[in-house]
Image (cartoon, rainbow, N blue to C red):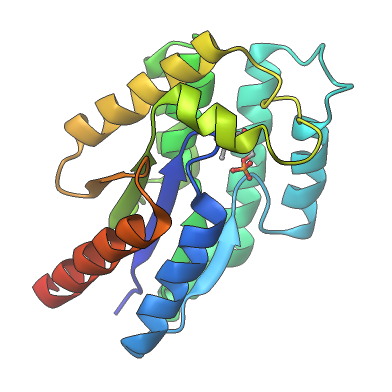
Length: 208
Ligand code: TMP
């Protein structure tokens, strides 16, 4: 039986890194040892593409180039890591996936949804996450949290209006696919967020 594919999404400063660790530990407590990976990246080639995408010196990258690089990294990630793991029955926990492309390249950059959907179909051939945890936080609050970290990358340099569009599309995706999305209010204290994550995961695992 194919393994489960879980993705974690959210805007800047939503707390993805610490919460993905929490989700990993929660799954391990249930006897599931997931393959934990990320996008863009997750393979040597994908990590090289990630470096190009995040490098703030590459400010001339055209929107379509950015979109295609995201899907190039994803195609490699699927071929080398995600599909083989799922086929072996392993679970995959991925920090961002195609919902991020709809949010950032679609919402943020304004690329038409249909164009992204065509690439999604081409590259994923019907594969979708089984569960997507969306850590939702008001943009001002996320940016205030993210601002406390190191030098901003090419995406982190965007203005608040860009991240408002990103958030809007994430929430639209959640409404479009209610069966796989769980929206978590990440504006609260860490313990509260993690309590909700634990409840959501326990409920989801028991339904399976
Ligand atoms: P990270 O900081 O969560 O690791 O993600 C790196 C950046 O890449 C983040 O600013 C969001 C962006 N991104 C996209 O724009 N489109 C995508 O499809 C993915 C996966 C990430």
